[in-house]
Length: 394
Ligand code: AMP
Image (cartoon, rainbow, N blue to C red):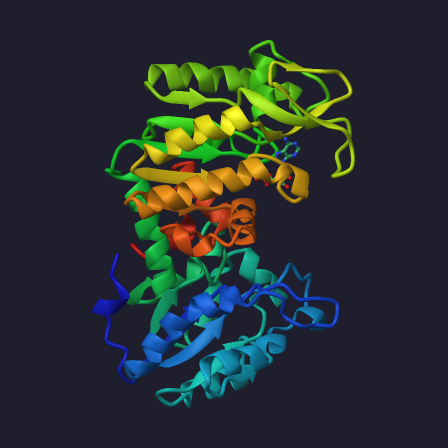
C-alpha cells in the first residue's frame, strides 16, 4: 500500500472519501465537528502540494434524496475550519458535476452531495463507482469509520485508480492497530467492557492470540460470573452466551492469558442515581439488586494490571458511567490508562462509549491514540480484512 507522501499531487484532482457524518441538534446545528476536524490534515496536505479536492461522504442513513441529510448543511462549518471557499455540488454524478470537476483549479475544493442519496453507493455498484472515479486522477480514502463497509466510494472505486492511498487519518488508524496487533511491546492488556458479551465475543476470541492480560468489566462480566455459577441477582446477562464465556475462558487458559474479572461490585436496587446502593462480592449479588459498576477492590486490581502494561487496548466502560453514581470504575480505569501512557505505555482507545467516557473525564489528550471508527475498529480487532483498506492495496 502506498503512502500519501509517495504521491505527487501537483496539478491533480483528488477524490477524497472523508467521513463527514456529523451529529446535528434539532435546530440543525452541528453538535460535534471532530470528524470534519480529523479530515483537515489530508485536505490541507493535498492543497499545499498543488492539488484540488473533490470531497465525498455520507451523512446518516437516507432512503433516496432527503434534504434533512444534505451535506450542504456542513458547508459553512467546513469553510470556517478550512478558511477557504468550498463549492457544493447538488448532484454527485452527471454532466454538470463532471464539467465542474474537470474545470477545477489547483487549490480549489468541491463537496459532493451525500453519496447515500444514491442506492448504488451501499450496493457497491461498479457503474456508480466508475462514474465517481471519472471525476478525479487520484483516490484517497480517509474515512476509517466506513472502511468496514464494502460500498462504491469506500471500496469499489479504488480499482479505477493507479494512484491511491490512505489519507493521514486512516494511515494513523492502520498504524495504531499494527502497534497493538503486530509485535506489540509486552505485556499487552486488553480492557473490554460494555453492556453485552454478544457484541464483542469475536473480538475477545481473536485478541486472545496476542494479549497477555484480559480485563473484563461492565455488564458483560455478569454472563461470565453466571457461567462460573455465581449469583448475579438482577444484573444484566445473556443466557444464550454462557457457552461462549466458557469457551473464552478455556481458550484464555490454553493461550496463557490472565483473565481478570471483577471481584467486588457496586450494585443498586434501581437502574438510577437515586436507588439504594451497596458494594458486594460479584458472586453474591442479592435478588432485586443489579451490578452497575466495579467495586473499590476491583478498581485497585485493574489499576495494578494496567500500570504494569506496555501496550493497552481499551474498549467499553466498566459500568453505567452515564449515571454519576456508577462512573467511578470507568474513571479509575481511564486514569490508570493515562498514567500508564505517561510512563511510556502505548494506549489505544476505541469504540463509541469508551471514547465518550475518556472525554467525559477530560483525559482524551493523555492516551496514545483514540480511534475514530467504532465498528471498523471492532472488525479489525476481530482479525477481519476491511474492504476499504484492502481495496487500497489492490
Ligand atoms: P457497549 O456499547 O457494548 O460498549 O456498551 C456500553 C454501555 O454499556 C453503556 O451505555 C453502559 O451504560 C452500559 N453498561 C456498562 N456496564 C453496565 C452494567 N453493569 N449494567 C448495565 N449496563 C452497563
